[in-house]
Image 1 (cartoon, rainbow, N blue to C red):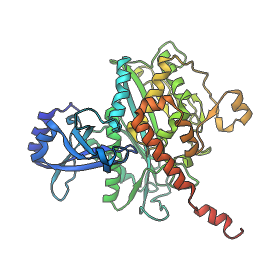
Image 2 (cartoon, rainbow, N blue to C red):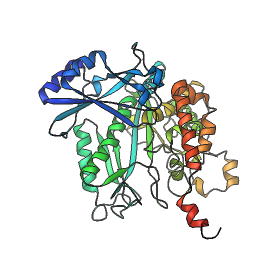
Image 3 (cartoon, rainbow, N blue to C red):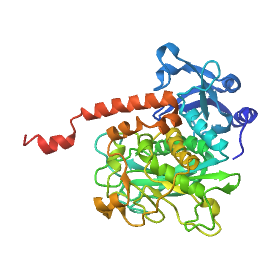
Amino acid sequence: MARLEKKDVLRISKEKGVRFVRLWFTDILGFLKSFAITVRELEGALEEGMGFDGSSILGFVRIDESDMVAMPDPSTFRVLPWKTNEQVVAVMFCDILEPDGKPHQGDPRWVLKKNLKRAADMGYTFYVGPELEYFYFRRPTGKPETLDSGGYFDLTPLDVASDLRKETVVVLEELGIPVEYSHHEVAPSQHEIDLKYTDGLTMADSTMIYRLVVKEVALKNNVYASFMPKPIFGVNGSGMHTHQSLFRGEKNAFFDPDDRYHLSDVAKHYIAGLMRHAKEITLVTNQWVNSYKRLVPGYEAPVYISWAQRNRSDLIRIPLYKPGKEVATRVEYRSPDPACNPYLAFSVMLAAGLEGIEKKYPLRDPVERNVYEMTEKERKRHKIDSLPEDLYEAIQITEKSDLVRRALGDHVFFKFIENKKIEWERYRAQVTDYELEQYFSIL
């Protein structure tokens, strides 16, 4: 899709009869925020931005310093393929600025731009291709009720939601977001739509649109789509396996034709960086209490910090090289879940990989057997560490991480940690159904 400029936005708005433009941005937890302007205000907004009260947005500013400016990014302009109250509506992502025009350090989009600039200063462009899984349920409240009992790659009649997926893919394509695959996943009523890889910022924006479109299409069809990492006990949770690579111009910096694994030294250092800092970045890639219900052995989610080519029990998988497909050489990082803030998650993964490249971290040998089947003694012998077991442990580790603090910046880092501590304390004080079922009648 051609990169749009201000004049293109004004022209397309006139041609398509746009009446309203929604301006989008996210808070630090990755929740999409929006306010609408009329098309009459569009030209002024593109030139000077639109002011708003930042004190109402989680992690932005205090009440006594509330003025913020949302500056639309014309390259993200899209006309929605559905009408709102018979009106044509367009959307644009915004960068959040201080009143003096400087980037606001609490803006997750700015955080990602800062980390992408670090990669660019090293000569790299960061490409990402996430696989976002999710569930369809009959209603958003009460006990989750699935639509089907289908399994991996199942089609009708078990996969009754195939039409929902098709409709979602059509809408995404109409919005200029290319899709590679869509299919039923392993768990009942679980689905996956994979977006075609692109640069990190475009993909973070696309991920936000993807989550909204999945939910909008579901709602239109009287069902509920959830990106909750583990909504149902006893079946697989939803992940966001994140494929990533670095390019120098048109050349994939991860590819080496002479290496046994077809991985360059850059790729090996990048993988080593992800592995060394995996525990530190997990709070960001898996940011909810519920995220750690997914990261348990037995459900295809990674728990142990290892890498391999074929084995899907590892944290990092290197998809097998196909001759003539050098550009497809990539690293698949398997722990993130689809409920994360993609701007921050992409930032910390990239920061960890770049740290490995800068400091030339050595890469240990791959583990080509199922890590879950190893004894604890075997894992220790192979120096295989594990990811944090719960949100509390993740907070404790990340709070001490210089890498995450540098990647996020002090403003987001401390606000994020503060929010996660509050979440843990609220969760810790809850009396759960499990406790009542297990103990109420016997204690």
